[in-house]
Each structure stands twice: as C-alpha cells, then as structure tokens.
Image (cartoon, rainbow, N blue to C red; front, top):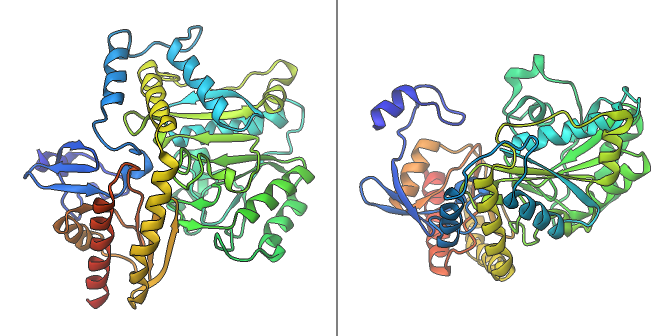
Length: 423
C-alpha cells in the first residue's frame, strides 16, 4: 500500500515522487497516532489545528452514527435541516452580536472565497465597481484556492507560481510588534499609508487576528488589530477576520479577535469546527453587509454542493457542545504555562532564534531551515509527530493532552533541535 501511495497519490506541497517516506497510520485515539508497525506517537499538530478534542472521541462518534441513521447528505438549495439550523444558532450566539448571517461551506479556503465575494458584491451591488481590491498583510496565509491565494503573501508565500494569473491586491507590512511588546503608532504606518492612498479602490481588509499561521507562525500585538478596526471604520472599509486556524479556543480566547475586543464585518471559521472529523467551514457576517450584497435585487453568488452537509453539521454541533461544556480555558491556560516553562530552555541553543507561545501554540524559530526528512525520523524515534516547515518547529496539541504527554512533546523538541544544531 505504501508503494502504491508513493507512486500514485499526491500529498500537500510535495513532489509526485516524494523525497521522504510516508508514515502509515492505522488508527488514532486520544492524542496518539498508531503506526502500522504498532508504535504509538503523540500528535503535536492536532492534524493541522483541527483535532482539538483528540481522536476517536465517543461523543463525536455517537453524533456521526446517529446522523448517519437519518441522512448523511441532502442538498441545501430549497431544503434545510435541523443540524444546520442548530449549528447556525450556536455559532451566531458565541460570536459577536453584530454577526447575524451565516454561510456554510466545505473548507476554510472556501470560507475565505465566500468572504471575498461578500466584500466585492457589497460594493458592486450598490454601484461602486471601483472597490475591487483587498488590502492584506505580508506574511499572511488564507488558503490555496485562487481568491484566497490572491490575498496570501505574494513574495514569501507558497503561491508565487500563480502570480501571473492572480487578482492583484494591495499588501501592507507584516503585523508587529510581538504580542506583549509596547505599542507604537509607527507599527501601523505602512498599513495606514496604503489605506489612505488606495481606500477608494479597497473593498475590504483581510487578516489573521493575532496569529499568522502558515506564513510564519507569527504572534503580534492586539493593539495592531484595534488600530486596523479604527482605520477601517474611518475609511468605511469592511474588515474580514480569518479565524480558520485560530478559532475555538486555540489562542486562549474562544476567538482570537477577542484579545483586541474588536468586531469583524465578516468572520471565517473552519478547521476545529468539527473537531477534525469532517471538512467544514463557515463565513459569518452582519446584516449591514448582507443588505449591501443584496442591494438592487442581487444575491450572494455562491453555492457548494456539500453546503451545510448534515453529517458535518451534526458532528460540529457535538464538537461545539463538548468544547463549551469542557474546562477548555483552564486546559489551554495550562498548556500555555507549560509550553512557556518547558520550551524556555531551547533559548540557550545557538540554533534557536526565538521562542513564541500563545494559548495552545508553541513555536521554536530556528536560525536555519529544517531538514524535514531528518527531523521527522528523529521526532518519531522520540515518540511524537511534529511537522516543521521552513525554519519553524511548532506544535498545537489537542486540548486534552496531559501534562506528562505535553512534557514528552516539549522534551523531544528540545533534544531534536539540539541535535539538529550540532550537525
């Protein structure tokens, strides 16, 4: 099976003939992945932010089984169902009160596409066709579909191969300073300048609140987000917050924008929405935005086949219920405290440039790019699964991880990074 995979199956950001062997996972439970040879390794990645409750969760399994006995899917055009209505109600209740409408889609990237369409149509429907650009930030990442790619970092991002066919947007300097650093208005000067100069062309601003993910795992000051909201209000620009990665408790707040106490005009969520069971996302927006989109008889022009899939909605409902009833804040605070304490010793290593921690996110930035194949093998030998990229070794474990399991993760990170620095 591994030989067939290697010959025929494409994997994320990898050549068709992989330069490293795949690891065959035969089952997963709690925070552990069981490999084909019987070894169990701790997943430090929550399968890219999504598996917040761990694997093989009884409550989510039961929700899936119950929904399967009713219907796994039904089209959302002209039809509706209880799981979607219940999920919409919960999401609108736990997000800012200004958000009153919700659009379900099947991935985080598509939720960003829908947000961009909302922003463009908001102005076009009202006769303002000049506002057709998005102001985004360098080092940002918003997904791999074409609209989403057009608002990712155009220089250091992963999509330079498509530069010639992407919509041309406007980019401001990457967010700064760091989360707890002193705020100075100079940190917003470039963004402010771009907004002043191009505001008649800008439909919306998009950014990942507080934590930039795949663009570099950068954690920045809430004061910047506050200033961005103020400037968007000044120039009557919509603000899109992409919380696909940061939503549902990962940063220590239920949603990262709460660190700055701001209100988005459009909010994107995904990844952890179903606890990692199925691909699903949502785009939430205000009545003001929807009234603008629908001006002069228009409607939002999007409609995925698997929109509001009942099975995904049912599992998402169970996942949110499990999260909100759990001591998730206490758990995330505990993870944050432990990460700060146990990753601190990495700072003594010459290969380490910086340690960053927020909520259940721990980042070790190195002074050199990692050797992915070498590090993967070493991590597995230490009993953990971590997927570094560029010069970043980072973890975002499931919230249910025990102190002992987290210490296994952090201890292995230290040992492998130390060995890598000695090569």
